[in-house]
Image 1 (cartoon, one colour):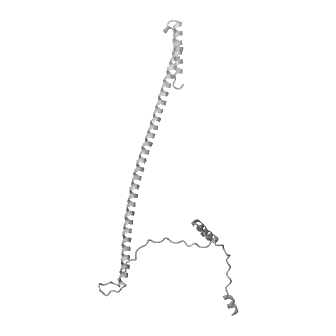
Image 2: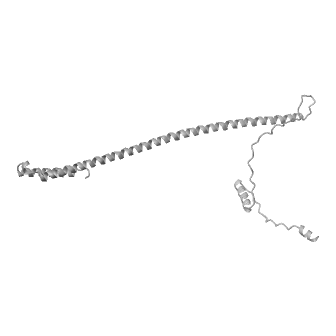
Image 3: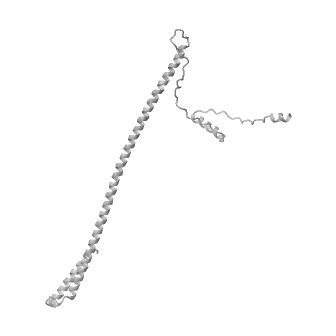
Length: 209
């Protein structure tokens, strides 16, 4: 008996420390006090209110029991009943009008989004086509430049070969020309000097110099 009485005795609650009363002067101080109160016990769960659902009128009853008749013996409270019914009907009509307007605005917004999307895609395709044309033009110009460079290199190679052959022929003529074809030794000397001058000029005017 004594043990049950001892177990039923509750332990004394810890006394709370007295806190100074702080009166917030503005909204910032009030928010600061709330945050400080929350941070004193961070393990405590904070209730987060859910988003309020959109108001909708009460659906009509499946069976109406209180039907108002046209008898002259209506009581004094029937007018107030009619007034409440009329208020609910007005609310229902306002709700229907608001929903219709909302659906209309949503449909217009979706149409505007589709038009903007189509316009953006057309603009993007136009710019993509323009960039592709510019890229192809640059590639074509680069290809033509490479072909022209190859042609110039091939032409200079042929000119170099022909000039080398001509120099060889002139050297051979200047060194191995018999004197009796030119007459006197003075003529042979003059012909050799002219040939060597031509060879020298052709050597300095080569395209690879």
